[in-house]
Length: 184
Image 1 (cartoon, rainbow, N blue to C red):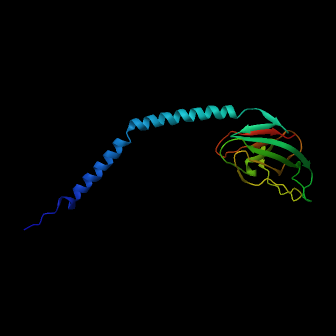
Image 2: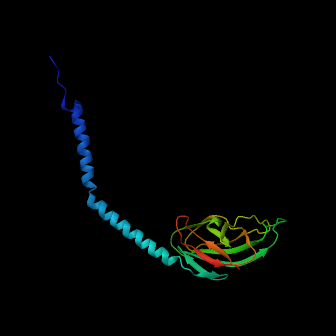
Image 3: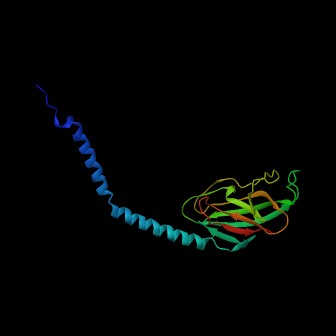
């Protein structure tokens, strides 16, 4: 005599239960919701692109002017040039630029800052301001600015001695939005 298995001990019952669960999940996350969310995300991406184009203006700020991006006011307060830095010489045709910047958070959320958000641009070449200047005791470090917080500091880099030299501030690695300050 063959013993019969209970209904829950049969393999095909569990397959049907799993299949039913997938169907219920599919109904809850219906394609209508996906279509609406795709349309909403496409609309949001389009509006972000248009607002980012507005924010990335061709305007070039001068030393002493204040510019705002992502709730951060940025001011280049001073620029000094030098042909030597701590007995080191720059690459041929270059000179050292020591730039003093002031950052102020005018938003309600904390904002991160980093000296690598800044680059120096000259003759089509954009490089980091990563020279170590032991004479400057107020180097800009990385950190967070709370709402209303302010920080200032110096950064040193090298660029071509002749031609236009600009400081580029790009607060987000994933965005083309930036501010440009003319140093020379």
